[in-house]
Length: 114
Length: 112
Image 1: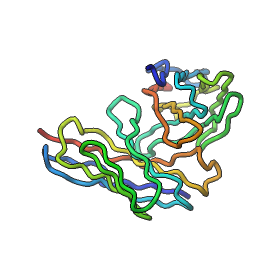
Image 2: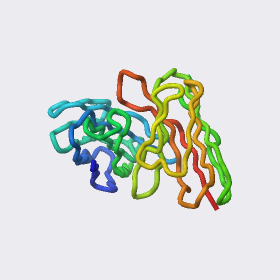
Image 3: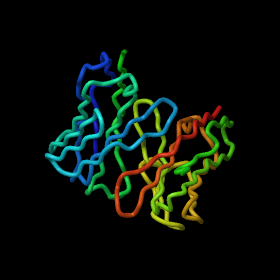
Image 4: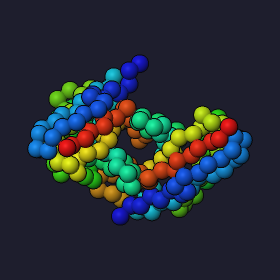
């Protein structure tokens, strides 16, 4: 069974204090790994898709990287507006619904203190 | 650019009642999805649709019914609501050529 584990569950950073969020996954075959941002009371907002080990994507202060077993979301010099829950999801070649089921982790709740 | 809209945003209903959650998208995306989000479980897929009149079960379909007569609409019906169906429900969509899904704002459903 597919499994996605995110750590830490919660992270408090001072403004400007860089850190990384982790997403470990177990799949039969990775079709894609997705990062989302979710603000309280809102739907997840798409950030990145990673397809193969070694791939990296960047957007403003965020950088996502992928290995064969995990992905990291690096946050450089975060600002209070980066406070949100960050969700990781994987899509498995081997799962019977194939392209149509994203398996989500439970997220990392990030708080950036001014 | 409305994207995906969901209605109602909040709903309180009683056990045993039928309730329908609406989802509408303006992007003409072929795929649409329904997820539920519960503490400790993350988002779980209930049903999805690859096109009008084509639907299939996800991870947690029991107690739910879907239909898709038009590409832009994908309603989710709880035929006889139970307290275990208290949750936040999200609709999502994607194109046929890429895998990232785009989510609506959610419906918070409470079954008393």
